[in-house]
Length: 365
Image (tube, rainbow, N blue to C red; front, side, top):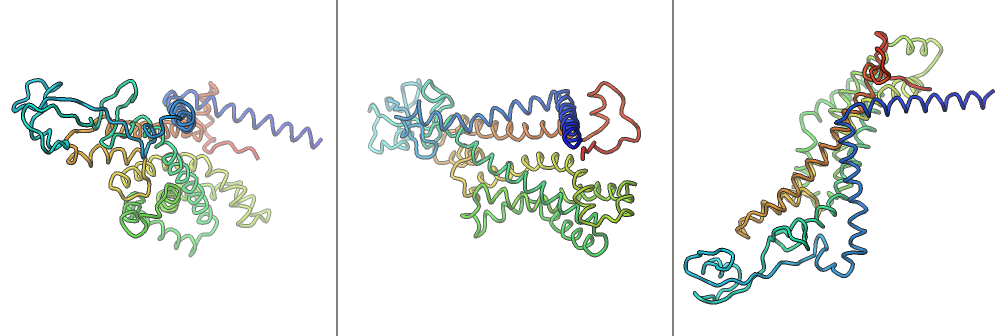
């Protein structure tokens, strides 16, 4: 009898997850986000694979931090440039290292940044590094920041809201004041301040995501989840549990937390966007310990312009577009998770109308 009951519960869970997947699949934007995320996940494998096979004998060229392969260009020094492909001005020639150049001399210099070519699909940056290798290598620290921030945000926000819901009075009041104070000091701004201060050298991708998740989970996420947790505490099944002798811990674990999971999942995915953008901005300002990520690539494309005199559009666009698409993938996935958390949208996925009384996600105990 017990085995049959466990099997029935297992089949019920499979049907529920199947319903979740059908609801998610109906949202085409969410499916697009999942495809984008899969592409970014593949970068975690592609870069080490290339470094160990195709680029094994060319580490000096394709290493994302120490690599260098600037093409050599030969031009004739002239007073007035008529053909930029073969001629160079006297002042420009001297700025590129040929200090003793004169009119009529043939000079050689390294082209940095270099445009896309067969050897460098996205060109090279102002330091002669392969931009494609930099984009692939930047996926790892970005995932570390995003996933750490997401998990910590969801965990802290859920526990924060659940404790407030089952502990009205002084505990709820103190925690609410803490959330309000943290709300006045946004997590992205706090990370910039930490990076600019004495913690800059310690702000690795993991600790960046950890600090961001703590601040975000205890402020915005906790406030949103607390309001939903309070509505759960007013439901008849909670009153029935209290009458039967259930304590605060039982109410929190068995009733409040399961109903917060769908909203926490949405908050978790949106926290990825905030953490990755904040980390990219901190790297852009050189306030992060990351030697290489997509935000640092934006800094390279913009911050070194005065030194090289040429706009590194290949670096700037590669970093900014990759960072934007990565954040967009998590946001689009959160739209599908939002549909799963909404019972009426799940009913539409089943092909029927949602019951009027159904206002919370199904929970299989």
